[in-house]
Length: 350
Image (cartoon, rainbow, N blue to C red):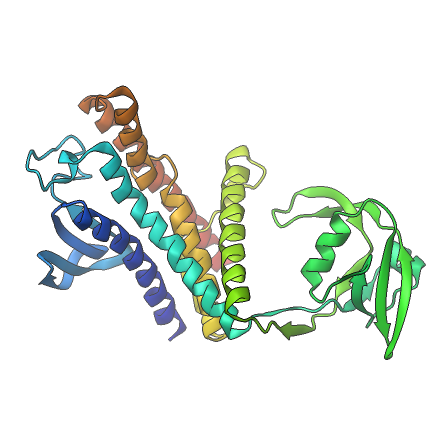
């Protein structure tokens, strides 16, 4: 059942991406011939809004086929006024941007729903104090609850961790212990640790670990909107940084995941309830939005690049260059998909 939910979520994310393209294309007066969820052989379909809507056998993506646009033949064009390539470059760019934009909007909506539902976060309660660490020397103990740092209230572990990371000297901690409030001075020590990309970094640390205690955030509509915007922004930054780490080799290619990893994560999240599913669906939606903006000819970002070139130079790329770059783009994209699938299989076997 969880795997069915994950495939349903993935199909919904693809649907919204393609719906973005479809909606703006229709607004620009472009005739959309086919709206497909999945690739390959058509399983079933129907006609509506003068478009054929179909579900295909391979649920690993989707597409909208607009008049005058054919990825299999990038040089193909139609002179009709309702064709894609008859539109001005800025109109085509708007159509192309609409897909990733729909993913970002959907992610925002999902994060907003999570915010209203009351997400759980780690409380600022110490679960472990490292021996001979600044925390032990200052008198901090397991079970202590950090109430404030330098007079600023904290109730989340991440908020406290960020304050420590940015510290430049001694910190005054307000600590609750056995129903008493203590004020302790502690000086973080710059130490080596690993970040989320398994890189060795140096930053100020106290030598404490969370207890695992969580609490529910009670967010109103305004706070939930801020939460959604912040989560969407942070997820976008995380994905851009991850791509940069992969390209520079800081993160090995073996860390790249494919569709199996996406399905498995979503399936695991379904066991945690609707909030977990929404949270990871939002993250994957942002992922789809960011990846489709990459300047790879087979993706939206590549087509945007071609249209920007046409806007700047006042002429379209030559058919020969367009075909060659598109073939290279598809080769790169298929290579990445194959690598992701290979890594997925290795993880499953291990």
